[in-house]
Image 1 (tube, rainbow, N blue to C red):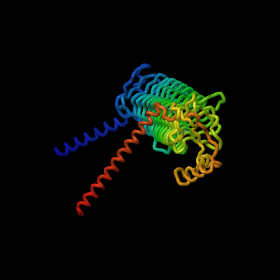
Image 2: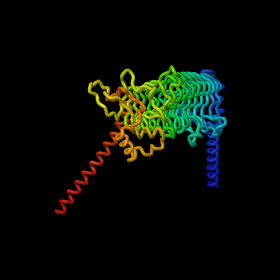
Image 3: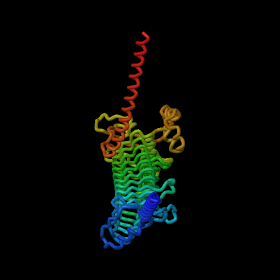
Image 4: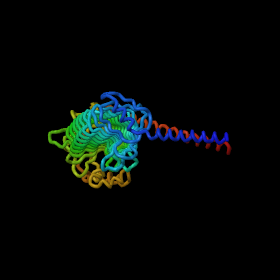
Length: 461
């Protein structure tokens, strides 16, 4: 009888525990909604730690703080959190489980008014990450955004702005999304963001008067692509290993008055690509103090590209330093400014005057490269005996040499010092460290081999 009583008590405790866990797991966003309803506008609401199921619509300007201990799970349906009142702050939440259908573009967080502040959140397992629609003067800061496990073309955008002027997008990490894209949004400050394993790291469409600085675009199909956007400054960014079908570190299409300064373009398929930029007759582009290194093509442009000044850039060990996308040349651009051109790692000239400027111009008269311009499929023969044979024929028979596609009249004989050079020097230092380790390993192997040979000789004698 006593054993049966203890058994019943144990069963009761188990049932009560299970019911309590179920009640806790059944906590819904209605709890958060009630806290918002009871608060005055402008209040700071600290949401109790826990997991909340459902969707949240914030229609009052409050500060909602989860202190990193609150998860809102949308259950795989719709947009999880909607910000519908100006002067709203959403901070310290984990937002997950949006819908996956593209018809209504479900997002983790969507703001349809501004200004709002979205900061210190983790947005995971969502189609679109953070979506701002007509939300001017907003701040999106220090968020971690990851899309659903889908192919790149089926994912939503990690961070998207539509008609949202004067916003600051900074220190966000976006991983495995489609694009970080800005539509019809002007006066933006895009800085300190890190985008990896996505399609376009930063993509601009019809968005003007913006600064992009200190961003890292690593391992995407394209790093930064600007389209139909004017008066953009791109500076102090690192664009590395962007090697998709396009594979541009930086791409410009039909953009006016673009400044590209102090960036590092490393190991992309193409470091810088320009298509008809600037597009207006009275506009200019400036590309200066950039480190363009280890790319398949350092600088690629269409023949109609004009009015760009390239000065004091470092083109180092690219498979092809400069190329024309199609037939033609780049004569309408200037590869020097105020008597200073660019540094070319394959420059074979000299500086008798000691003024740091080569006495001979740098020209591209490479027969194989001219063939590449007409048939890009020939790139399969790069660094092969076939390429060497074609280049030898071009040197042996000057009449076969093509006209130069561009000329740098004032090549630099020493690499210019810039922030981009400092960035790439750290890249070089890492490669040098690896090389040193391999050299030490090889040296140790040779020493051990010699030591064993000496011992074998002593044993035989």
